[in-house]
Amino acid sequence: MKTIAKRIICIALVVVLIICGLFVNGNIGISEKKIVSDIRNMQYIDDSWAIEGNATDDMAAYICYPEDKSDFVFSVYLNHPGLSFGYFFRYGGALAAIEEGILELEPQLDEYEASAYISMNTKKAEKLKIDNGTEIKAIDIDSQKPFAIVLPADAGAISFYDVDGNLIECVKETM
Image (cartoon, rainbow, N blue to C red):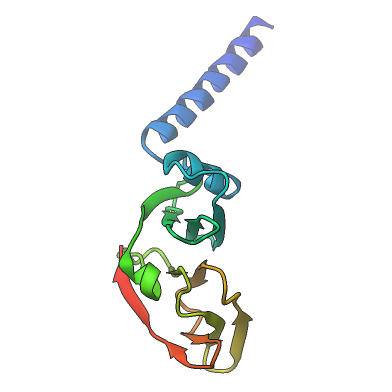
């Protein structure tokens, strides 16, 4: 009986040590459900500010702003491939390209197969079209609200259109 108890304790201890090792090495991140609360805590975002965004398996992108849209902060998280649990903050702040138009953020590393499109939507983007070569998928966007959208890198050609049907050019940046 003592041998079984000792083995169980040893196994439990090994599991705890492995979890501690993963945490210390930065392999345990934030779950998708906790990203918004992490953004509010780490970037000191007031509860009255709206947060828009989404996540894929590789990346999460969000934009935070007050009701009057006088300010904003964006955040991008990456989910590391391999032995990794959760998302890790990668990039954030406020960039002029987001305030003035649409910023496409692309990870510098090849293992991430997604891009984030972030905007305060001053150009009044109303439609996102994705052309994968065989079909064109249209996604409606609220022209009155800022947005952060993450799309797979292999989704196809991405185009944004304003309320008058004019093409809106994206500014591309790597992170």
